[in-house]
Length: 198
Image (cartoon, rainbow, N blue to C red; front, top):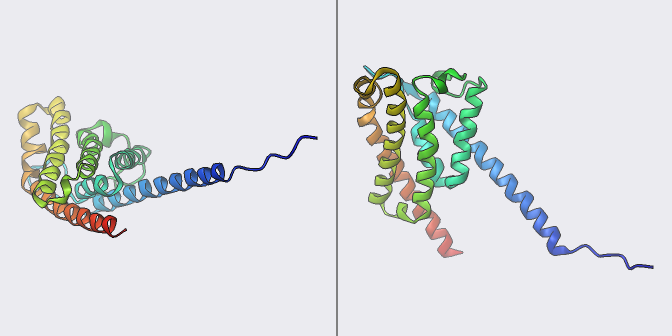
């Protein structure tokens, strides 16, 4: 008679660890979607701008810092997918594929790139210094505007795309980047102190 095989405790722990990691990832991505959606609700029109200014860009930039590049990009991707399915997650409570294929689609694509970039910037330790953190946020915000301009230029031409899709957002974009940079530097400092204490 063959002896009964005992279950490997390490294998069981590995399975539980994978399940826990999956749950943490799902919760993190969901929280990122909720934050970006909440940011989209804070919007106001700008004179001459094609789209309203919103707080969601700050949420996108900070998602990379808090969630990391991979999870942040997935979070933004899920946010866009939900909007494409008609969920009212975009600015003004809008939803639908037209927001992705239309003039504002470039900004949404830029969100993914910006979230990944800020996540990578944080992981390299650059967010621990305020100036470096703010610089990273400005670059990431610039990527959003560049992606938005690229899509708009295909529809209305480069000059009009700049006037309606970039210029009105420059001052506010810098201000929001500074705000995100300050928060990112603070988060990095606290996280570093916690790691040292542990």
